[in-house]
Image 1 (cartoon, helix red, strand yellow):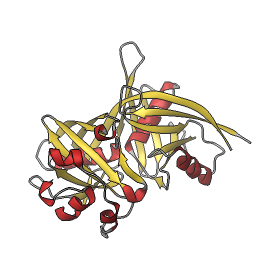
Image 2 (cartoon, one colour):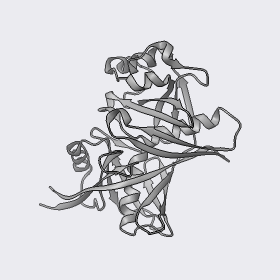
Image 3 (cartoon, helix red, strand yellow):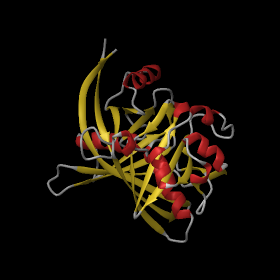
Image 4 (cartoon, one colour):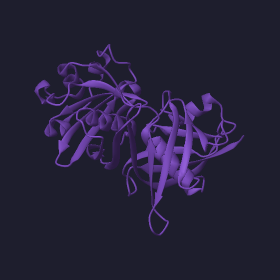
Length: 291
């Protein structure tokens, strides 16, 4: 039998039992793909990451991301949490790490506080904003268990957006966001959307945005903090106006009892709209998986 160390962290929070939990295997050498998938299912978190040596020695690591059911080419909170774990072990160079992933190269930047203790990790997503098909408000309302009239279409209709991982994004009324519940049969009827694509709904709350993400057909009824969905949202919002850049604070996970705070920025670049997402993390558990 061989043992593999794992660490769990709560991502996008500054307190234990908040944010989105993540399991990280800092040295996954020797694990097969089937074992990685089995370990991700065993933890049952929305994602688990496995750190491997990079193909290019100029990069920090190759990172593989698994949900309990499948591997992902990219995801937000797993990169922030993995960056936190590796930075805590001194793996960054001048505050920067580069992760090789299915969707491309992900840059992670580390900002430490004045005492050198706490840190915020911010990642730059690997791809520019891509917008896809629009969807009928009635279908979105059915998926979220709200009234069609509570789907807000003043700024944009519900649509597919991606910056490395696609999501359906829709604005809803603030009170509807609070009482929304995922309805798996309605998700199954969205034939134009792959089963693994989640629904990211948001509402405006003063200068802040509140959001929730449902993906019941991918085994995630609700996610407490979804970096990849929120970067797509930030990019989408920037695309609706003429500003060269914008910043957003997004609160998620409140209804689950796991409040999360994500710091987003989006800007126009030569190849389209790019975005970053960052936040704090909290160390939780450490152990060994024996296989």
